[in-house]
Amino acid sequence: MKTLAEGHVHDLKDAVLSSHTTRIVAGEFSDCSSADVIVITAGVSQIQSMRSRRDDLHESAAIIRDIITEVRRYNSDGIVVIASNPVDALTYAALKWSGSPSARVIGSGTSLDTSRLRWRLGERYGISPHNVHAYVIGEHGDSQVAALSSAHIAGIPLEEFCRDQELPYDEADLKTVADETRTAGYTIRAEKGATYYGIGAALVRIVTAILRDERAVFTVSTLVPPPMGLGDVCLSLPAIIGSGGVERILSIPLNEAERRALKRSAEIVRQDLGTLDFGAATLR
Ligand SMILES: NC(=O)c1ccc[n+]([C@@H]2O[C@H](COP(=O)([O-])OP(=O)(O)OC[C@H]3O[C@@H](n4cnc5c(N)ncnc54)[C@H](O)[C@@H]3O)[C@@H](O)[C@H]2O)c1
Image 1 (cartoon, helix red, strand yellow):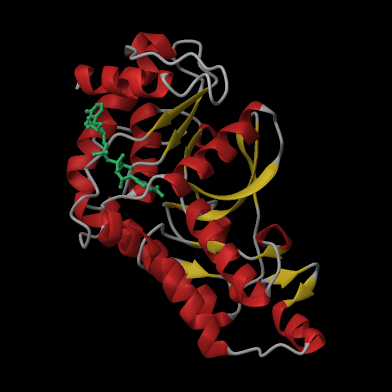
Image 2 (cartoon, rainbow, N blue to C red):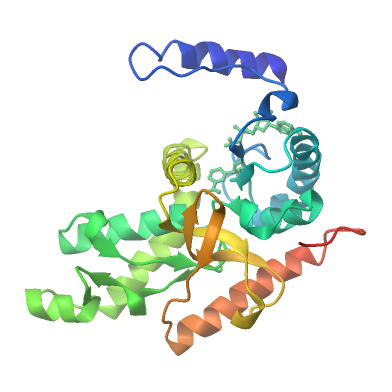
């Protein structure tokens, strides 16, 4: 594994002159002792393209348990961002095993799916994805929920925007957009083996928001507050991200079908959590 890490270091260093000056090392866990943010991406290879992210749960959980224990041995306070899948169950597990406050262990969650939804809507309506506001919430997986009832462009609800602009507002087409968003990971893995750039860019944005205390909104996986009625689970909701990690969780308006789908998504993650052994670990 060390040789592989060294290979990545040598390859990445070859890019430094053409990109930006960055120190790249094949490190030990002790090197993260002063890190403000620690990103964990280790996990099971994505090569078997049709496996669901949930199929890797037990193998990945064992990896995350080892890594989070070592990280917290040297760094008790840095914000941990997990990308490994299944990311919601692993974020919850890392929270338990680390004993950290919930704001400081975050999963990349549906930040990637939100990006996938926004660029697709942007293409449909001929507008920059920066000006399309819509969120994918719930599990980063097959039960994710595209919260299209609250989607808007420049403050104008989607349906009204279409009417104003004389564009077709087609519910079947929006369902196709949501389906393509949900299955995008499988599609890319079938085409090229693994997804890299989307998740890489999403992680850079989340880490930047933490380091610069941006208080920007991302759909990250986080421990759901009890009043939301979704049970003891981590999943994605829009959250304000700043130097303290998850600064605040936002409750967006949902229609009845979206509310039901979010409950179902939480149930699915809770089912997975029920198969993991947390021993005496408790949440703070
Ligand atoms: N959250 C997302 O949106 C998203 C997107 C892409 C990939 N992923 C997930 O990221 C993970 C990695 O995917 P990948 O394509 O980079 O796989 P990969 O096989 O290319 O890399 C996984 C790496 O983990 C390392 N590893 C395994 N066990 C380890 C351990 N105990 N300690 C340290 N390192 C260990 C392996 O050596 C390997 O380098 C998977 O869980 C994948 O599903 C998540």
